[in-house]
Image 1 (cartoon, rainbow, N blue to C red):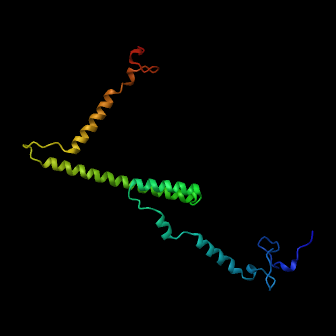
Image 2: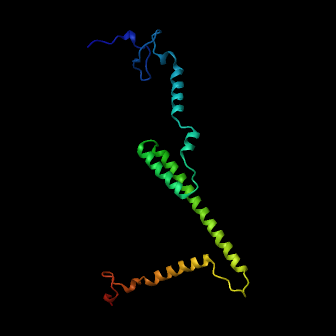
Length: 174
């Protein structure tokens, strides 16, 4: 083996105490040892170029005003994590924000529905008692849901009537 030409290498030492292995410039030092502030400046510039700007990241998200839009955003977020476009740690933070947005949408929808029901009920209460009032669509809907729930409970056999092994009421053990 032939020894390396030491005159073409930087004369400075690296942080670990070993000789710098970079090629030397005319002054005997490598570019970074000759310009010590340049390395940190270039590192900052490189980091800024890789970081997405606020405008870019805001354009990536659709308007999250419906539950279906949030579902699509979560689907895309999962795909981006899988493709390596988004780091899992960032996705975790976004997932909690998406969950918060979904709960806010659900709460807002429930509040709107409740206000509508309250308005319909107040209109029905203001009607004169002597006049026959046709049933409102809301009361018919609630009555139908209540009847369906009552029928479902009536059809469900009681636990004490069934045998634990067969489920047949006639094979009860006394």
